[in-house]
Length: 253
Length: 193
Image (cartoon, rainbow over all chains, first blue to last red; front, side, top):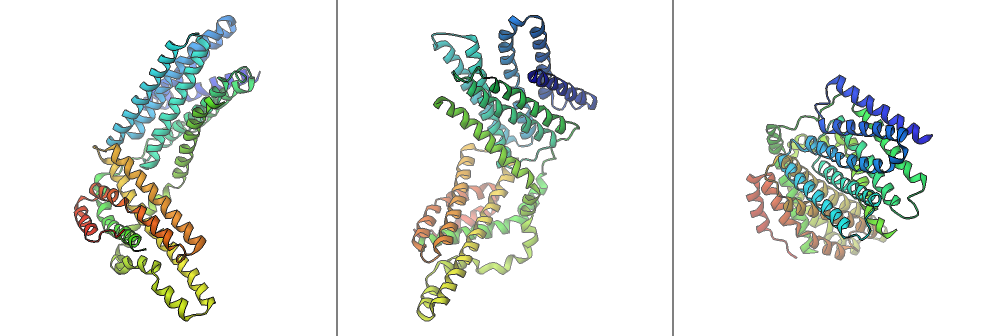
């Protein structure tokens, strides 16, 4: 019953977010994110139909669609990457290299694992692959967030919401799928609820932060930076003078 | 259970980075004020010319020798207490100034096209090591006082010396006009380690 409530609430929130974005016409601003949300809505409706009309086919259908959802989820990462780092060409280059490098490494590892394993079970492989793909997403998100944090990149409310919501879901997915892959933990119903609850939390965050369009603040113009440089250069020289004094002291003590 | 450790590690990393970013978002207005700090203090630039010698004086033995020879125990205790406070304040000030340099670099890096990841990583590591060492020194001084920890401070400060190269790299990017001047200045006053 609780699962059903989570299911319906999730569908309702997805519809709300999508309708709101179409009505406000800002779905074009974040196409990859809304594509992901639309795909999930479609998958959930299809799953519900299969569950209602062909319950036996539900398990394999679930795994195939889950794999599809995990792959489409990379669209969210791409959206974050595109919007967060678009004003910083150097950072974009670093993030792009990092993103494709990590993705390639994991797909290679997953393929090698699938080929070398003696017994091949679709359910286990899908679960493990899903766990690994979420782990990679966690690494990519952590990388992008670290760049945003370190370089103090200004972000709008929409992007913050997308990042916080999706990170919550990815975090919960990695933990729950890691536990779920253990022999004793898999069948326990508690762990199966972690992901839907986290997804509902993410949807609630998205509902609040994507209620209206809020773009990223404009990047500082070069002239302002130049002006700041002139003002700051004296301070910088004095700061380095302090550092020099600091190092000089190290030699004397 | 051991096979789950990498996944927990990754999840914890994501959570930690997210928490740091959230904290930064809440403190954004504070950061802005700090960046605008030089503008407010521009007029006072000339009055701090003798600040270079302050560190030497704080950690030097001259004052302590005088106080320990000519004053009673209570005065010596008071002197040590006040000197520790002064040393900590000086270290904090030095750390703030280096943070300001770093922040300026980050503003510039956001606009730079030919960002070099290796240099950026080195610089970030140098900076974090510098911050850790500063905190370590503050801790040492707070626990044992500036006179008793002189040797430890000396060793730690020598470890900081390798930051010089990183700072030069930073200056080359942030303020190329002043970089040459600063490099010459560094070379003339080489670290005596």
